[in-house]
Image (cartoon, rainbow, N blue to C red; front, side, top):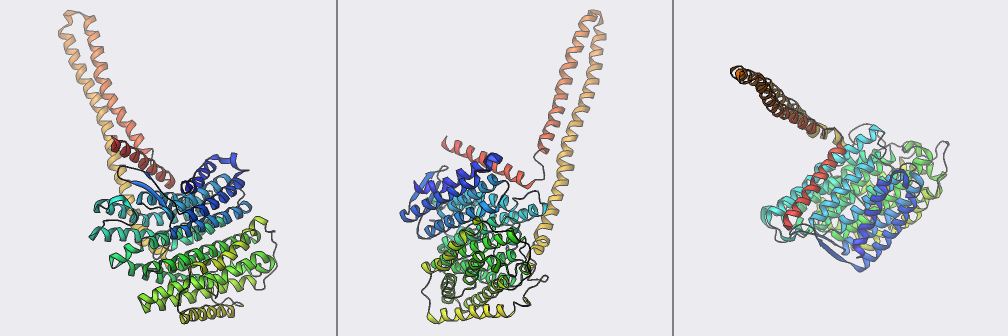
Length: 618
């Protein structure tokens, strides 16, 4: 019962707030925070009780949820971060609060279903809801066209990767795996390979691993609380969590585990280098998210599930803390440029000290949590390959550089500027998150050799010291170049995928205009022509009949002419009008609005599911 309540409460309350509009404006923040407290209590209850529930869904399919050791850590992490973000947002979001808090709660509810799902239908449904709400939250300020474009790019990129999940579901169906459980019982041979490939692609897209990383840069267009939630315990974490959950399947294929490990470690290194040169604090943190999640993906590929979970939990607390600090400064100072944030930590000491703790944790400085968790991941990598370990250690060095650079810049001397006072809601959650960030990884990490821990500590501290030496001139910053532009991944995607797709779409649109619509128009013209021909012929025939039977009486001939003419003309013209009406109906859904297409697809799938359920029961 507590598990059903854990996922239902945020979904139901969030749905009500999202559709309440201005009527919920004044109470939305209080209701959302109260819901967050309740969700945290239910999460603790579920983590202790480890419930397992399921319900019939479709014929032969069940909607299953459960809390085990891995998902217990995740539900607690999601609940804690959600509550901190909601408290922060009460002081940061000042318009459309009902819609905002409603979407955040639905987003978090979908993540809770994702981390407790035991069957593929439950995972698919929560995956979809999470993707749709992330699109709405990134483009929350929808009157700003640039933010809407950013939300669309993020949405389409993750949706492209999500096709892998449907490929996996199709392979499970075709391969005859009974029960649709995420342990994939009875799945053998080629179908197992297809399922693994689909899940890996979907997870890479959600977790912004190479080559999908660029969507996370675009996601920075959303409000700061959204960035904090999306980058820490939800969305981005969902892909890494999925890979950790299906680690036995990756291992069974013989190729997927190695591929996952290498993509993870290369992403950790490459996006770590991208983070080092960013001039925008939120972009630096976004690139660092790709890099840190790369360590979780590396753990999934090398069999280090506990180490990956430790990294995920420690990173969630750390990254939510850093994004909320960045949001507080953005509200107070009106900038997220690192050059404009010089001295920000001195002017806002609670925010500055909290940010400093988060930056040191992110850098991997001992004895803080990410140092412990990352060491466990690197030890797991060393068991598989020395090359993986060396690349991972290089990625750890980039963590020290970008985190150290941000840390020293916000404490550096800067010009005095006009600033607003941070509200209590802006800084209240920060000290608690700082404590969690520093210590959470210690709970699940550890177990590495002393020399590995010492080596990674030397690397992290050395990188932070090097970052300190460059603070005065900020020599590492780059406004242009491959690294500053996120490796040119978005431009590459435009050339390799977007341009060909638009070309095909244009061709299909022309086909629709010229062939389909043209066919409808031709049918209408044909109907009208037939009507005129029939009219003329019938007239001549009727006239002939009338003339030949004139002797039978003028009155009878006129009556016959009227009835036949009305009947034939009416049928033909009715066909023509029906063809025109169908043409207008066929064009009505073609609005060009992405969210309307998505809603139409969702409604279509819902209707299809209902039909399948009814037919299946029959």
